[in-house]
Structure formats: structure tokens, C-alpha cells
Length: 446
Image (cartoon, rainbow, N blue to C red):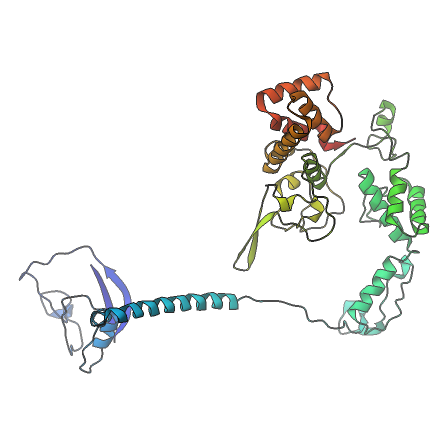
């Protein structure tokens, strides 16, 4: 059984549990004030026993508390009261108890919500700033006026008071940085666009034009592009058009042994460097080939993650399925730090928690496995096969030709057609779609 101790009607200590014990009639005694028999010596407890009561059942906590009161009273249990109630009163009592439980649950939920904290910034002007001599906050010199870096040039003197608002400071800072006479800004912009079109900028370090940055491979070209960009009214579209219509951009990617020995890294731009598609572009290309890509521009993005809040922490679980809401271009994807896409990660999509001046380009077995087994790729291959069957009709060869056109932009040659037909006959059109998505011709831009 279980023995519970009470002192002054309140629980005392921990309950003591023993095994099942049987006491035979007239062979055992109930003794008070003694540890064990025989009496005498240190086997006796000190103190006085004022009253001893024996019951033929286990008392409830309320009954024990009532028995600790020295006043004479009779305790009536809840069960005894309920037995004296009418059926109607019992139903009403049960309804009230359920209502109490519901209200207590709501109070608990409200209490948990009330523990949440919201942090916000207090908007205030930065105030005047003074020079700290040798970095010592106690040794202040003349007041510093808001402005840019004089060595960079441009309108580095902002012409606003030292107590100007944060909004005014930011506005003047933006005007100074993007001033049409700021040569550094113009060079950074044209180099960044060149970087995205060719895979590498004229300066290899797009975020660092300082002493730790790289040297321009074509310094006169980057200067000319910067001036051209400025003279064209700093229009991005004009700069894009100028680059993509250039003879350099339209070169073949074919290699030549002599040039390879001199410039294997192609810094001199003697050929078009093959470039593997970025993770986002690769995802969009698969959606386009499958006929699923939603080209709607602007508006809210999409979240291909399951959001689970827990004790102030938010957990994101990626969803690889191609749901209707997820068929937009990847540029509209909500990118949580903890919900990174497996297929985008495998193709070097940067960690959203850190800045990435330029992307790393790696070649790993995980990329091939992702293009074969990822749930997104499997569904895209299935939709590609369905689209080809719908557009080309029941003829397997025409379906194969259509799949090649949709993915690689060309028809297969005789050998490729033969191998594709064998694959389709054995494993179906989905297998061919997976193979085409995994081909170098689909993944690498040449």
C-alpha cells in the first residue's frame, strides 16, 4: 500500500510505498508512540498523543485537513453530497464543472500569450557628435558635421546640421553614394553587372575595390563602361544591352590549345567561359520545361516552408513539392535562415544569414543525386513527360523529341534518340526527364 503523512492537516514529506501486505485477524496490534516492540529504551517517541482515530477507509485530503481541527465537527464528502442531489442538480453540476475546466484552460492560454515580449526601437535623432581624442570618450574635441568621405569625392559635405534627423542623414548619404560624379560607385555598378553576365567581374572581388581587393583585368574597359553608364543617364537596361550585344559576350566557348596554355582561367576573355546555372535559375528552368512556371511579376512572394513557432523560436521545414503557390520564379521565394531548400543548397545557393559578395561554384556528387532523387525534380520530370505526351501525341519518338526541345532546345541525334527510346520503353518518360535535367547540357550554360 501507500502511506501518506500529514502534519496539521497539510501533506508532509513524501508518500511511502510498500508492497501488498496482509494482516491476519487478532495476530497484529496497532501501537502508538513506539518504533517497535518491546517497549522501553530509545524505542519510544517523545511527546503526547492527544487523540487517535481509526477509519475503515482512506480519507481524502479535505477530510484530513478537517480532522486536524480540534473543534468537533462532522465532515461530509463531495460524494456524499452528490448522492443527496437530484438528477437535475447533478446534470447542472457537471455542466458547471466543464465550464470551469474550459475557463481555466482559456486562462492558462491567455497567461502563456501574455508572457510574450515585443521589442521595438525608439525613434530619436542621433544628436551631435564630437571627435574623441585617441578614442577616449572623456576627451572630446570639435563637433563633427554629417558628411561622407572626402577622399572619395562627390558631395561629401551634406550641408545639414549636426542634430539633423536620421531620415535626412540617410537621404544625403544615398545621394552622395549614387552621385553621377562618384567614379567608385559607377565602377562598382558596371563591374557587378559584368560579374553576373560573365561569371567573373573585371575586378574579381565585386565587394572590395580597396587594397585587399583584386586588380582589374581590363582597367581601361571598366573606366569606359563607367563613363558610358553615366552618360546614358545611369540606365541599367542600356548597360545590359551594351554588354549582351558585344562581340565578347557572343563568343564561342570552344577552347584553343595555345590560349589555354597562356590563360586557362580566361581572365583575358578570349572565349566564353562555360557557367553552371545558379540554383534559382536551375529551379526556374525545370519549372519552365514542365510548363509550370508562373511568370507573374511583382506582388507577394511565396513560402515553401512549414512554419512552427515554439517557445519564442520559429522552426522552418522546407516543402519540396510543386504546389500551385510555389510555381513562381525563385526570386519571389521567402528565404528563412532555418528553412533552406535542399536542391538550392546543393547548387551553392548562399546561406541567407551571411553576406556573399560572390557565389562559390562547386561540383559534388550531391548535385547529381539531387537532380535524380529530389521530390521537386521527380514531380517536374513527371509534368514534363505529361506535357510532351499532350503536345506531341501518342508516338513515343515524337514525345522524346519534344522533351529534348523543351529541356535542351534541340532535337536528339540518332544515337541519343535510340538511347532515349530504350530508356522510355523500360522506365517511362519520367526517367528520361530526370536524365535530361541531370545532363551537363541542361545544367551548364555554354
